Amino acid sequence: MILSGKEIKNRMGKGIHIEPFDEKQLNPNSYNLKLHNELLIYTNDVLDMKKLQPTERIIIPEDGYVLEPGKLYLGRTIEYTRTENCVPMLEGRSSIGRLGLFIHVTTGFGDIGFSGYWTLEIFCVQPIRVYAGTEVCQIYYHTIEGDYEKYESGKYQNNTGIQPSLLYKDFDHE
Image (cartoon, rainbow, N blue to C red; front, side, top):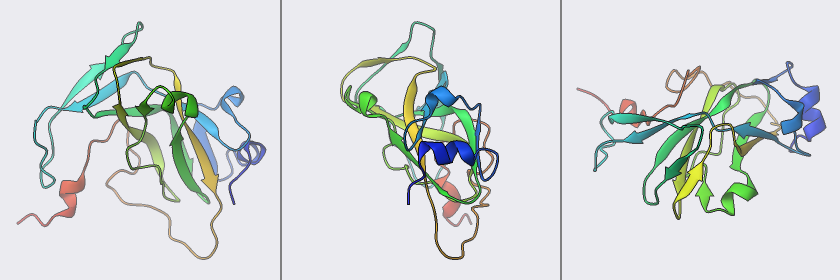
């Protein structure tokens, strides 16, 4: 089952934590999250899964920043979330998608117990000017049945900002 917006509000501080929380961002069955003013781009032309990739930091100015097609931007939410007893899910807002802006390429699925900012995998089909503070995506929550173990991995847990891929940690380093 997906939690209603009213149930998300009822569970604030009791299994669901969104900081900062603004009731104006609450929807009938989700909560809108905002784009932070920082982006990362990979600087290598070819990315190697077995290596930590160098990145360049971009700050979105007040008058916005134009994203280019064919380039992956990593962003993050302004909001820090923690979910203790539901499965958090992230989706782009339809108004954003209708402009050809994808907010997550593959990572809309969260884990019970995740604490941190959501790293956004941003991609556009044509040039688009983006602004920090825009409600770009929405988080919603599924209930879970059966026994489960909370996500406690050190890879992305309790992050303090944008997380580039840490896949290289999954490979054996000899």
